[in-house]
Each structure stands twice: as C-alpha cells, then as structure tokens.
Image 1 (tube, rainbow, N blue to C red):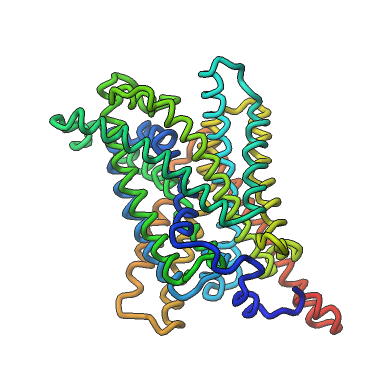
Image 2 (image 1 turned 90 degrees about the horizontal axis):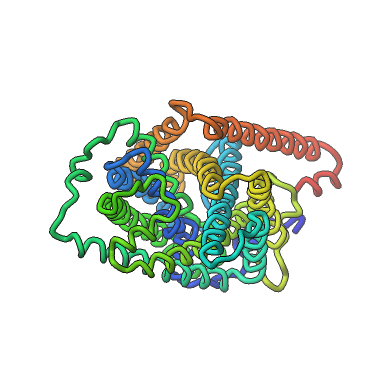
Length: 471
C-alpha cells in the first residue's frame, strides 16, 4: 500500500469488505461489545456491593452520562465513516499528541475489555462444568479456547461474526428479561421502598458504584469501527450508537432494581453471589431458567470477546495507516477482506494477561473486575477527548450551531468526574495499581509516537528513497 493516498484508502474501505453489514448487524457490534448479559450476572452485584439500595440510581446516572457521549459520537458519525472509530474522529482536530492518546486509549479499552470478559468466560465455564459433575477444567485452557475461536471467526468473516453475536445476545437477554418480568409480576403489589428511598446509601458508595456502572456500557460506540463495512454508515451507525446506549440503560436499570428486590426477598447478599440470576430465577419460581441464563452468560461473554477483538483490530488497522503502529498491520486478507494480522495481534494481547493471571490462580470474576477497570480508564479518556473535538469538527463540516459547545463540554466534565471517581480515594490492592499501569501504557504509546514522528521527519529530509519509505 506504499504511496497510496489516505483519502483513497478511506474511500475504498482500507481493504475491508464494503457495505457488507445491514443496520441490524451493525447494531449487533455495539450490543455485543456492551455484552448486556454480563451486566446482570457479573457487574450489577459489584455495583450493589458499593451502592446498595442506590444501585438502580447508579444505572440511571450512568445511562444519562453515556447518552451525552452517544449524542456527541453520533454527530461525528453523521459526517465520517472509517474503521478507526473515535481515533478517526478526533485525530484531525486535536493536537497530534492528543490524537495519539485517543488512539492508544481506545485500543487498550477494547483489548482490556476483551481480557475482562475472557476472565468471566472461564469463571462461568467452570461453574457449569462443576454443575455437570465433572472436574474443573484449566482456566488457561478455557481462556485460550475462547480466544482462538474468536480470532478465527473475526479473521474469517465479519458478516458471520456480526450475525452470530446478534443471535447470542438476543437469546440470553430474552431469558434474563423473562426472569425479571416474572419477579416484577410476582411482586407487582409490593414496591421496594427501601430502594426507592435510597435507604442506607452513601454518597461515596454511589460515586464508586457509578464508576462500575459505567463499565456496563463501555464499547457501546464500537459500531463506529465498522464504518467501512456497514451499509449506509452515515445513517445506520449514528442510530446504532444512540439505540445501544438507551436500550442497554433501560435493561440495566430494570435488572438492577429487580435483582436487589429479589435478593432481599431471598434473604441473600447480591454483592457476594457467584451466580445471581440463579437466585433470582428461584425467587421468580422458575429455577430452571437460572441454569439457562448461566449458559447464556457463558456464550454472551464469548460474543463480547469476539466483538472486542473485531473492534480492536480495526482501530489497530487505522493506527497503522496513521503511523502509530508498525506498517505491516495495515495488511488485510485478500479473500476474507478482514484485518487478519491486526486480529491476531489484538487476540494475543487480550488473552495473554488473562492466561498469566489464571496460571497464578486468579479467580475469573477478579480478572473480570481488574481488566474491566483498566479498560474503563481507556474508554473514559477516549470519550472525553473526542467530545472536546466535536465543536471544531462541526465547524469544519458547516454544521455548527449556537450552543453546540454545551453538550461536548458537559460530557467532558462528566467523564472527568468519572475518572476522578476511579482515582480518588485510591482503591486498595490491585485496583490501586491499575492507574499506574494505565499511565505507563500511555507513556509508552506517546514515546512511540514521538519516535516515529521524528523518524518520519528525518526521512523526509533525506533522500527520495527514504521519503518514499516514510510514507
């Protein structure tokens, strides 16, 4: 691809399959990266441990915050479609170093979220294996198996992966909503006033719970990574971004209220339950559905792994075109029209920390929490910086209106508060080290950026051959 203008590359889709995905398949990418099944079975209990009766409120506030981000991102998506997602939106507007921070943050966000759900996969995998009466299978093996299959599907055909993710989530979320509906119908004459009055909730608990609630939504914008592969992307992608944010927020809030109610009736602690939907299904009087939901959770976590690798590979592809990573990662498969090398690299990057932690005996839900929190840092930084670029972006496209700066700046402030909630007070144990890991990662990314920029500048000042190679 040496010497091919970037404008031509974007027009031809960077070697990806053009207009292959329908609006529903495009929406499936965002929905699967959110993994709505994982929130009721894994994230809501963590939020409840902090926010207690304010769990539903944490999700209402998180939905509002993500909706602000969705409004900003949908504005970008109406005028631009490329596989680079937020990086392609922000980099032409922000200073080059800030654009690089968005790119590296977004890449880490997708990869770390993939690592998180791989941890959840081996947790639920072994939970189901124990239920069948068999012995526990190696967590490392389960992690490698889920990743290998995801990489193969993402490498083989983006259309197949989108359809698969859509059906997986549709079935598993439907089972959860059936259980939630049964609980609400059973207690339709009994409002949970302890929740509605926020009894026992503390301000600090709500703040920390809100940060975890935001993790439930991260990746909702990943449909933007399919800009070169979606049909009519300037219409379907903005819709997918808004729809996935609002639909997920409604489901999560409903599930949060129902789970806290159900566990109060059952006399159990939601914050420490390893399989909360089984308990809730028992309260609903349909215990058999609990096992089906756990199976659905396992498959949904696999779908999220696939979605994260799909999105991360496309960000990495565009980063290679922008000179932020090695040029060999620009290559796409001639027959499959997928970023094959980038898929393999992101798959390895996602499974490697999980395999190391699993080999050291880490619990799957601990890995889910650790890597999910690390990924959240990346998303918050990428969201905040991208929203700052929106006003100038709209001016460049002749779409700036009075007051157009209000929502972007408000969104940036909300993301700043969310980041502060992650950093202070300093969490204990592993969570306290994650900010240092994130900052160290960004420092390495910026060092690569400055080194490659200096190298390109030196080449341009040299002989014609070097100038060609630099391009």
